Amino acid sequence: MDTIITIGREFGSGGREIGELIADHYKIKCYDKDLLARVARESGFCQEMLENHDERPTNSFMYNLVMDTYSFGYNSSSFVDMPISHKVFLAQFDTIKKIASEGPCVIVGRCADYALSDLPNVINVFIQADEATKIKRIRQRFADIASDEKARDMMNRKDKQRQSYYNYYSSKKWGRVDSYDLTVNSSKLGIEGTANFIIQFVEDYEKEKSRNAF
Image 1 (cartoon, rainbow, N blue to C red):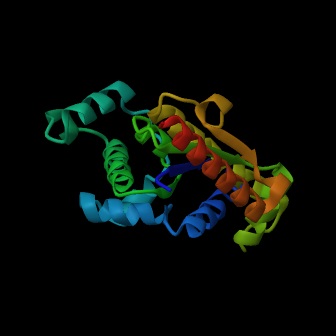
Image 2: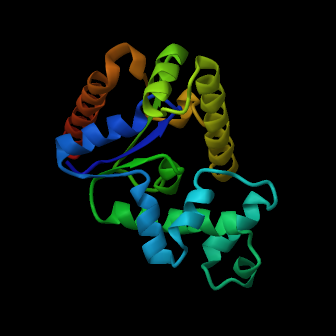
């Protein structure tokens, strides 16, 4: 297996857990929050600052200037004056590309599908779930969320952040079917069942790729 799997996810859909199960199946690394630790190690940014800007957009700078700066490299004079949120994005962008060059893995969130859009061996998945399922999972995960209404508010806030971040930095739309190779509702099969469904999809993709290679 040489496929890289990226996972976009709604908050509370179980995307991280599903990614970990897929990675365990293939005995490969799953990158989620620990991606930030590697970005910190390789970029020099402190991890706390990276976490404060993680998957959060800003409207203070034009996207085109960000990508123009990226294309010219970090020595561009405009990089010095770039808002910290954009420096964080570019550092993540570089680290995601480096991780992908090391072999198959699972990467959760952080516009990984966009960062790796030039690679042929990537499957991009988006995981959603029914609202009731997400609210139940959020309340189980966060002890301080004492009501469905608070869970719903947290879910909506997190999803809005992820959507804004993705739509701001990528050329695609977060959660829209044509932005991904596979979208799946984890409420239908559960966490383990959804992971197995995606694994079957990857394996069928690998077989098809092998057939087309001849």
